[in-house]
Amino acid sequence: MSITLHRPEIVGDMWINSAPLKPHDLDNKLVLIHFWAFSCTQCRSAIPYLQKWWRRYRDLDFLIIGIHTPQLDFEKEPGGLRQAVSELGVQWPVVADNDYLNWTNYAANSWPAYYLFGRDGGLLFHQLGAGSLDEIEVVVQGNLRQTFGDIVLPTVDSDGHLHDDSCFVPTPEIHCGYARGRLDNSEGYNFDMPFRYRTSNGLKKDSIALLGTFVAKPEYVESAGEGATVFLQFRATEVNLVLKPVEAEAKVKLTFNGKTLPKQIAGRDVSESGEVLITKSTVYNLILSDHPLDGILGITRESGDFQAYTFTFSGCRS
Image 1 (cartoon, rainbow, N blue to C red):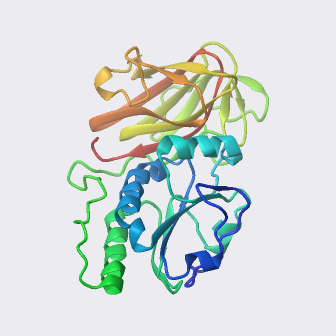
Image 2 (image 1 turned 180 degrees about the horizontal axis):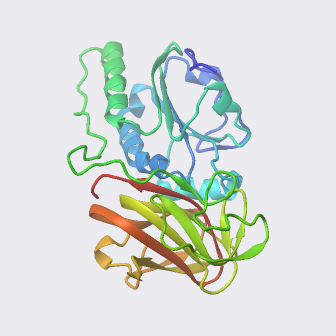
């Protein structure tokens, strides 16, 4: 399906921060459609920039609409979406797209995706994937100047990424579940039932392996007892993982190349002792470094079982 050239009607019964918006509500407005999912790292990273645009331009008939199309099944839960919208400080209208109707109508194919429509509903700009956010703001300001004439607007900010020699191509996204993932264990996945895994001798580049008892599901692997460990071989400056506690909470211990994770590379969600407390279904920042890392991250169950979904990475310095 090709990219739409005119703004399709947005459908959905569950709206946050707004009553349902109909086509006439968007007439004569500059509208940015943001497809996102709350466990998507790049989607979450964009929120501060969208917040800035919302503050700067909303009084100039500029509107952001977030269309939340879930990547994972747990993102379909209304309570989880409402909590994410609140915690992330999303103030603009958000509609749940659990049936992928808007995703299909807009021909979206990646998270995040952006569509900027002019006041007549025609497409001005679109971007599939993270890309460079300042390009969107340049087009927004161009339209505002065309509409309002000699208007004073703030300087366009860069998107916050350091595109210099410190950036490199990191490990690509890795899925833990068997529908889209691949294990480096010689035995491969054992589907949908508890199985005791044994790690292979060394890990291949950009791969995961399991040690101990896990239940493998299409979207995730679930620990099933003490000592269950996910090993990840990666190259990146930042490592994130979508995690969910099986019950109220779970705790995991992190290691890097067989030793306790050094404090200087510990991510935002890691405690002083190298542990992560998993209290909800979301993305957790495990490693954040100012230089490239190449090694093996271990994630070991300490208390309570957990589900591990998707690893994402960055190749730019923190």
